[in-house]
Image (cartoon, rainbow, N blue to C red; front, side):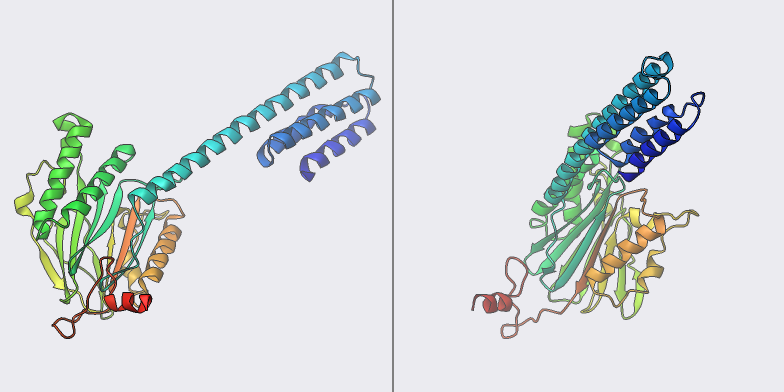
Length: 374
């Protein structure tokens, strides 16, 4: 507030002290113009009124209010001040609309990408979602988990395209996964079911076969049993996960198959790859928005190199480090959405009638629930 008021006082005093042939009054328009950037409607209107009053004072000391020059200056300053108030009004309305859109977007994200449980069976999970558009919180990237018996199944994927169509496809796939994860014994069978679901959604929402054929979803299906120190992976055109084990960061090898949503023509190509996943190991699943992020020189984000620095970190800390480092690498501007999910096996569940670990429906050991209720 001091800046525009100081300008008004300074211009008025200097103009009164100068000869009548020098007219500094038109410079008073700078005050309401500056206020538009730093204040609201009422402050801009107040500064506009003060500027007009200052112009009147200058006219009184320099020839009177009836001179054509002073009348035109007062009218012009009044019109410009009113325009400044109108600009503030339009800007504030758009800010309110944008805030409402962000609120709805955040609610939609919470409904679609529900927060994952921190503990699920023998696993500790941590995740984050970074939207490329600053005005939005959701996009076409997705992740979901499902607990089926003594195993945990995980889905991470990336819908081709952006906008509402991508969000709709992501929501449909996550809903299909939550249902189909309990109905199919193997990951290839689960992938085939998701493929059929994605194909049906594309055909219904896009209409023509040509448009539907151009839409697909890269996905990764993971299955982690409680009683075996392995994990199983079915690869559907998605970036492979990274395994942090025994001080090393390695990419999990697999046999990639085409993405989901290609009209069910690729189900026979899908296989399951089994790899060691022991207590203390961490898996990092991600979408291509992470590894394809570029810095100012065009260099990709070196994910494996950075993970080697944080291999001993807790999953929550690991996700936080990756997120901060990624934003620093890109200067805070992402070119694509990025979903990141870290999974650590905290312990092995014991097997056998005497040492078996009972797991509740929420994935927590029954011993923990018994202690809680006692």
